[in-house]
Amino acid sequence: MTADIHHIGGAPVIIGAGIAGLMTALHLAPQPVVLLSRTSLGTEASSILAQGGLAASLGEDDSPDLHLADTLAAGDGLCDEQMARRVVESAPQAVENLIRLGAPFDRSLDGRLQLGLEAAHSRRRIVHAAGDATGRELFRALLGVARRTRSITIMEGMTALRLVVAEGSIVGLLTVLHGAVFALPTRRVVLATGGIGGLFCDTTNPLSSFGHGLALAACAGAELADLEFVQFHPTALDIARRPMPLVSEAVRGEGAVLIDEHGHRFLADTPGAELASRDVVARAISDQLAAGHGVYLDARHCLGKKFARRFPAIDAICKHAGIDPAVEPIPVRPAAHYHMGGVAVDAEGRTSVSGLWACGEVACTGLHGANRLASNSLTEAVATAAWVAESVAGTSAGWQWPRLPATVPIRPDPSPIRTIVSNALGIVRNGKSLCDTVATLLPISVCETAAADPALVALLMAIAALRREESRGSHFRSDFPGRDAAALPSRLTLCTAFENAVTLRWQASERSR
Image (cartoon, rainbow, N blue to C red; front, side, top):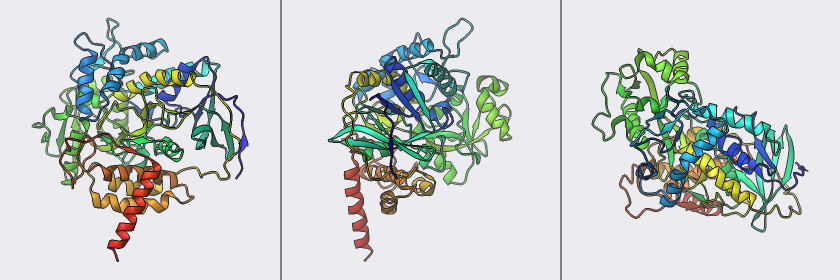
């Protein structure tokens, strides 16, 4: 298949049109920028599903130092403290920027921003919109501004297939639109593609979120970081719908408790109880389910009839499933929700490949460490978008590539590997299962099939999980339940991962003889 060159005047290209992509494009204005969305805008962005909001130290009893302390505690020893401080100190201004762009945050009668409480936060510092529809409302406001900004060219339905690299630098990308392949020459690409939840059977993310940006970056030679750390949200609504509707942590922040089918509150004696860090709560729920118990979130006493007013979207989803949260407990289970790992970036979002940046969930800035603090994700995306845009704007457009690649990959589909990933890279992992999974994924990842890129991302994650022989934050190894006092953030490239995978497969074949 050959590609037609679509000249864009060397403008930077942002791959992904969620909140991270939109904010980066808006910060680049009035410099021309091309924004790619693989679907109609807003139909498959994780951002619009975000319920909780943005964490920022806006309360009179709060400060960036307190926000930082909570972030570092949740990150379980692996946060980049300098980056975390920079983000939390920028968070109040990030909220002001969003208000300036039309974000309709909820306010009390005196006009002040309403501040919610979520797990592992020591203060009320979560700003939200329309109760539990923060992501949707922010996206709607930013998209409206982006559509009115003449310097932003939005290309809907266009999927990036590969980044083109020459002499160690980005020189363009290959895309597909309505079955036709196009080459976009550019020396500046920003990945804003979201997370990896679509690799799992139980997820709150769009099913197409398989780590698209990770595959693009890895194949371009970029360094990846902390891929083993996947956050499972403890309370997804336990129904057949996929992606699973989220029951926001803010419900527990208002006093809802977790109970089994007998009404027993099984987290009552755990430090922090229902508001312990997400990894602790998710493992506790997983243990209950594995023991054959049902798990329910009970908001009847703390909210009751006020539930529908405080959480209208969750109330509507529950009632559509035949559950009335005002008078009955909500069935819940953990689901893949957020990836702390991603493309390794510096303070300006630059990757190890010249001309390539990453922003939002696809990037690993070091803010989240081993376990993201609730509502720090939208905060990170909005704050870092400004720094990424400034770096991109200060980089020359340069020359374009001399020739096109001969082959074009197939549009990816993660569905064939979801069961494999769910079994091996879930809440509890073990070495044997991870080794078997690497052996299974390796041949899939190098074949020219729709499952190749998703299998490649899963392979990278499995190798990272194998290499971390400890339990920390969201990464729990049943064969290494202890915590390594000297553990460091992990780094991985595609080349290293393939070397590890081939060695493991060879060792497995030798043992089987």
